[in-house]
Length: 219
Length: 219
DNA sequence: TAGATTGTTAATCGATTAACAATC
DNA sequence: TAGATTGTTAATCGATTAACAATC
Image (cartoon, rainbow over all chains, first blue to last red; front, side, top):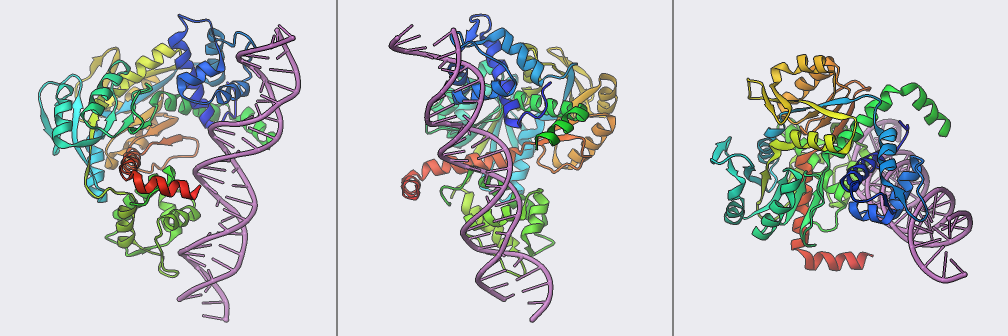
């Protein structure tokens, strides 16, 4: 584990790794601008981040994908498997609506949609439909903003439908880069990268002795 | 609506409003350092943000809470109620585990907990328990990281139990400032503030004509 | 008045990006 | 070689914070 990496760099390293794993069957090497393109960031960013973890590429072939995947693991992973738990994530929609009601904002949770549910339910005044009804409901209710948290495979398909139905902004939790027209505002929150960042910093705390001394010396 | 506010300012304005609403019954005015303290940020930040939306305080009394709540609404809200929908937020735990498995990280989703469920289920290899079993499971499985997305009232109580059981880091979706010992790493993601930011920028797009001209002139 | 707070500018800090020498 | 890419420094950009005159 490398101590004292910037927060944002740790997040990106997590994103690099996921992108690299997804293409590791097809390719052996990748250039900084290709990897940057996959994440929609600047190539200099990629090179700088890899510099920080001390990973070197080949001037012609670029970076060795398998080696880089391992190297990122060495840089940010703990030396044992850390466990994660989720508490009550399903309740988020209703909570947010409650906040909206309290804070006097001009926002309203008009509906929630579930992937595996067929019947329509009404929970605390917020209707919960099957996703198959999404287009109809968006149009009928003029829903403008979508909070999207579905499996990667479904994400783009559902986003496309929602945009066609009139959605203007998406808060995207689905860890997939969504293609969308420029006038659609998209805010990506990558929960996987965030948890990995969290894990890194809890580890760092764990290896405090080394890390803190290094920090002080650098300053 | 005020155009060209920085993203972070819009997010904080949403947080200010929520904090102000929560105390508007008890107090009439608030000083910048009190409001800053509620959000754990710098007082200069508060004053600067309010300056950007042109809100003026009294040099002795501070800011009028009710007026400020209205003023924030005028600055960031749309002139009609925008609707929001949620798709499949309940699936997040399992998705994240799938990503972990694929990307070769040293992380594992050990359990998910639900507030309203009593029986233990097993979905795609991830066990889903009642929250009442949380402490036991965290200890038994040595869970280190918790993704917490429960209603505000429960959040602190559940966090306390989890920390006592050995949790080291929390990704907090519950829009509540969690009190915790310094060695617990906490990452807050405020979904309410994020959706309000999103709404602001979709509105801005909507009022493009004015906004873009202003932008160009400023540059 | 003395003391405290606002409004605002300037300084600082960190993150992003441009640029380019070194390299093959 | 000519051309392309890396590794790294310097410049830029934006966000945060310190500082302080103005005010009551």
